[in-house]
Length: 239
Image (cartoon, rainbow, N blue to C red; front, side, top):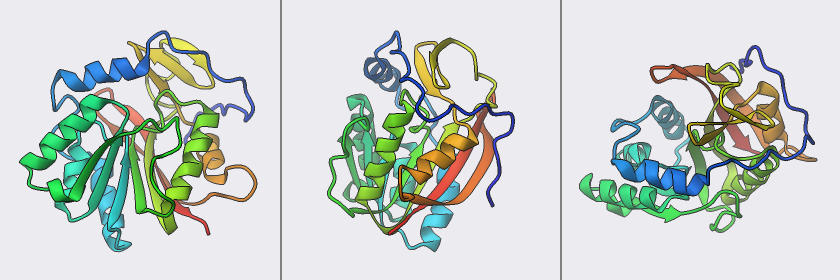
């Protein structure tokens, strides 16, 4: 099922690159993630639980998790038997994931690495059966950076590999608040969020030229007490 994100005003492809945030995001996330090990919850997220059902159905074994944060979903996937490469650009995140993996007895199934998705992913071609990213796509990434990231994910996935990601949408209660940076990006309390329209979801899947991914499912859901309004996107790597 593919559902639309209502009330959107899509940003046309080719808009100028967003302005720089007033806060350096890596340092900001280092502080946030290092403050306490369960800042964003100790239990697996609902998107992770939903993704695991799909991963089991597709017999996924090797999973790349981008923006792993403090590892609540990482440990959940590893406990389910998946081999998880958990990547985040904050060293505090990688350290916390490693500690949690050891405490949960899944060290042999978890590899925690520092990785900035604004750069080419440091993994060989066709390394993974699937990629999972909860809230990573809606961080401080311009549309051109999102296209480059999607191309890199396509590269490191095996044929027919899956990419499941979530992002806050333009119907989120926080949309339009804070400092506008252009291209549906806003800085609020030091954090930059890129709010997604349905058109942006389509453009990321299509890439430039031949489609990179086939869109399998796009669903809206809510998370947290605000609550945040998000979309969960499932894509399949085209040959």
